[in-house]
Length: 305
Image 1 (cartoon, rainbow, N blue to C red):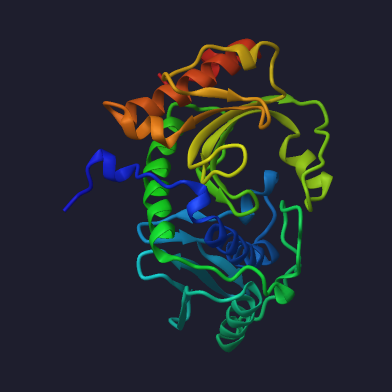
Image 2: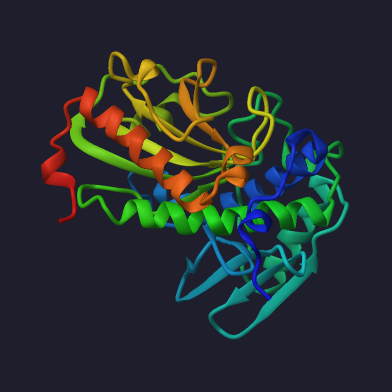
């Protein structure tokens, strides 16, 4: 039986599952760093991301000599699954356990498959970065909110891919960055941008500056946290053109978040919309239109006809 639109955008206040989200964030970073360590580098760190699947999140195939492997977080069965191109597999449950315990288990399972991987042991983009193998604090895991958030990711992935299809310039895939973490799609004008100031906690400035080496308009979906109390779509431009914060965008209920420097569409607004899909697409298109117009992008050259 399918879900109704209201089922597709359930209520999920971040405060209600913040401990689980913090733990899951660290687990995702561990697996993500395994992909990062082994995958040929792409511009803007596109080689490091996850992708939404019909069961959860995946690294996609990662090369390992003449073999490849894939790590999937199955958020229906709540387990980590490692699939290897030689036919072998391993799996273990997602359940309450410390980050250190999760790291040891994933490391050992990989080694048992002949896939030992060394990673940089500190998390990125968090203020208090504790080595994964020493983090005994983060240990919560509640399956229900994780599954609920993944259901929203499926919807967001679908709509962001629809939005991406209308742009024929340089554009990222729709992919899940485990640093923030967020699902994102980024459009580029092709013009160089001013040097980014950097300053993201535990992320080298050279990584940030390469990511924002050229003008971008980026949109995505995030599980929330201060100052946004729950899951939301977002949209921003770098560099932000003059007047962008004051632009009129839709639908009603979308707003400019000064602390983040981006427009936000809370999922509560999406859930209450007559057509949630149309509400999301209005947000994505209107924020892009405002940023691209104010920044004088060559709109005609980038629009699919």
